[in-house]
Every structure is written in C-alpha cells, then in structure tokens.
Image (cartoon, rainbow, N blue to C red; front, side, top):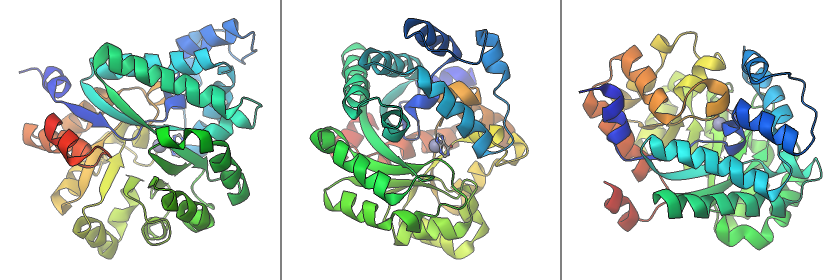
Length: 326
Ligand code: HPA
Ligand code: ZN
C-alpha cells in the first residue's frame, strides 16, 4: 500500500530526459579528476549548493558548465549507465533520451565520441536490465539554424541509430519558427520530431511547434493551458505532453508544487506523461516526480496508471511493442 512501491511497480517509459542533466555531482567530481578538468567547486556539497535557480537560463548556465567534464567515449557510456541503472530501479522499462551534441562538438569533442559512448551505455542497459532506449538529437535553440544543419550533417553516419530530433535550451526569444527548415529536412529523412515549447515561452510557440515543426510530441507544454483553442487542438490530435513536475518547480515555471497543472491536463483530456527532465539538477528521478504531484494534487492510483500508460502510448515504440508493455 506504499505509494512509492506502487509507482515503482508500474511499468513506465521515460520520454523527457536530457542525458547531460543526469550527471550527478559525484560523477561530475569523479570525471573532473579522471580527465584533469578544473571545475569551480571544491566538493560534491558545493556543487549541490549551487543548484538554486529562478529561471531556465540560471539552470542552463550551470548545466552547460557541468557538461565540460565529459570528454571521452567512456565518460558518455558511464553517464548513460548511471542514468539507466537508476531508471531501472524506478521501474522504467523504456527511455527516449535527449542528447545535446552541440554542447560537446563546440568544445572540440567529436560527435562520434558522444554518440558511440551513449550507444554503448544503451546496449549495456538492455543487456543488464532489459531496459530499451532510443536517442533524440536536440538542437540548441540559442544557436542558429546553420549550426543545426552542421550538427545533422555530423550525425549522418549514426542516423540509423537516432529516432528523432528535438529542440531545447533557452526558449524565450528563440521560437520554433527559427528551426522550421531543419525540422523539415530531418522529418524528410524519416526522423521523428519533438520540441520543448510552452515551458517559459508563450502558447504561440506551441502553435509554431505544431504548425511549422510538425512535432510528434510536445515537451513541457504547460503554457498551452492558457489558450483554450490550443488545448482543444492538442486534445483532438491526441498529442502527448512530456511534463516534468520537479523541473517546473525548480525553474519557477510554477511557484509551488501544489499549483502543478498535471491533473488539470488529465481532466482536459490531454495525454500527459511524467518525466524527470534533468534529474541530477532538479532533485528527483521519475518516481519522485510522480510522487511529488500525486501528493500535492491528490492524484488517484487510476491517474497514476493513466500517466504510466500514456508514457508508452506516447513513445516511439511500435504498436506491438507498446502492447507488450501494457
Ligand atoms: N528546457 C530547455 N532546455 C533544456 C532543459 C529544459 O528543461 N533541460 C535541458 N535543456
Ligand atoms: Zn527538457
């Protein structure tokens, strides 16, 4: 009857997870030593103490700085392995994980190092835990579209092992319209499309993600609730939203976890899912995210079953694979 045991026992997919955001302070410290990289922190406690944010950009600055300790294929494999071990313990059976190649290639780390390291971690997770996974290549929206095209080109030899493209980083001032052509190209190559929209940005950015990027899934989408016509569109098209409660709290998208809209999303008929976003920075993995909103918003067990079910129906798995999980 323990809620944690109940949520852990539900088979779940995680659909909104930045692998660089799963870098725990302990591993950051260990990799800094292994690679002889100087970091501006003297201890794991000092790193944790720096994780206090008032908006998305505060977090992004520290998240990109932290990623500097990732240098070798082995580092990326260890990063992925640490996430998958933790996710498996939470009852995650399938994960579609984001990675930000530009964060690494812009520091001189080849795309190959990042991709092969992550793929090695993914293979290990499947062998160890039966946890399947897919990669989503995210373009950094604070950079320009030419840089996104360069990234897609660098990814070319790996495209058979990449499920889709996404859009992340600083949202306000960088609308989806800026990336219409790269998304059209990527979709033309058979890649799925997702985008962060409506986290800090206005409902208009969600409209653009739908109409200009033709997304298959909406990351966050909180602010879509401000627009009834948009909400209706998302309901009628069965769009999956990858909602991240502890992230919303830590980045001040909401003032209090008690104000989280996930139950309003479910009542409106939206296909909401629960995800951890950047668990090392936001204070919890997927089960912690379920429990935070369950307690704050009085979710029923039926609601939690619905959320877990939505995570599979909203995944890029085939109908047959989804059926195996449900
Ligand atoms: N929003 C935008 N970009 C990001 C996030 C996020 O929550 N996490 C990592 N990159
Ligand atoms: Zn995110």
